[in-house]
Length: 345
Image (cartoon, rainbow, N blue to C red):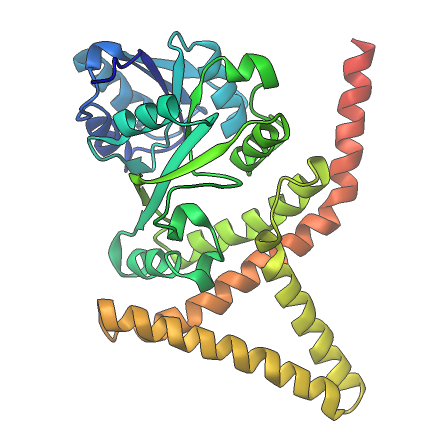
C-alpha cells in the first residue's frame, strides 16, 4: 500500500454561505488521513456569512486556516494559498462543490504513480431547483460544452486541461504561480504553461467532483457572457492557452449576424437566406434532439426550457466574446500602464 504524503488543500472562496458547510463536511469525510491534511481557505472579502461559518468549522477542525484575499479574484487567492502550503502535494478545490470520500486519495495516488504534473477528474455538474437541474443537464451534453474531456469523457488520457487539479507543490516554484491578470481561465493558462514546459496533464475518470452550477437563468447567462469575454482576453494574453471549442459560440453569433444582414441587404437573395436556413436548421435539430434526450430522462416539463436554454446560453457566450474583442484596447492600455508604473517603482 502506498505511503501517502502530507497534502495541502487550497480553496478560494467568496460569498459561499449556501455551499460552504457541505463543502467542508465533504473535505473532512475524506478517507485521506486527516493528520496529513492542511486545509487553506482564502477569502475574497465575502459579504455574507462565509468567514463566520469557516471560523465555526475551524473550532472543530484545527487543520483549517483562513487567509484574506484583498484582490478578491481566484488567481490571487491561489497564489496566497500556495505561499502557505507546507506539503509536497497541493490539491486545488472549489467551495461550490462537494467531494466523494476518495477524491483526495485518488488524486494524490494518480499524481504519484503516473507521468504527469497535474491530475483532474470528472466534473459531475448538479443543479438545485428546476432551473438549476435544467442548466446542469445542458452542461452535461456535447451541445452544451463541446468536447470538454472533464465533463464528458470516461477514459483515462492526457488532455489540454482539467478541472481544479492536484499538483506537486514545487511545480509553482519552477514555472510560476497562477496568472493574476486572469479573472477567469486561470486553470487553462496554468495547464497550458505546464504543457509548454514539457509536463503532462492527466484526466482520470475515477476521480469525481460534484459541482453545483448556477441555478437561475440570469446566473447561467452571466456566466456564459463572462466566460466568452475572458476567453478573448486570455487568448490575447496567452496565445495557445484556449482551444477552438472556446470560440465556437462567437463564430455562431458572427455567422448568424452576417447571414441575417446579407439576407436583408440582398433582398432575400437565395444564397444567403439558404445558408442562414441551413445553419439554424442544423442548430435547431441538435437543440431539439438534446432537449428531447434530457426530457426523456428528467421529465417532459424540461423540454421547453432546454429548447430555450441552449440558444440563450450560446448567444450569451458569443456576445461575451464580442464584448471581449471591444474591451481589448482598454485592457491592453491598462496592462501597459501597469507595466510602466511597475518599471518606475
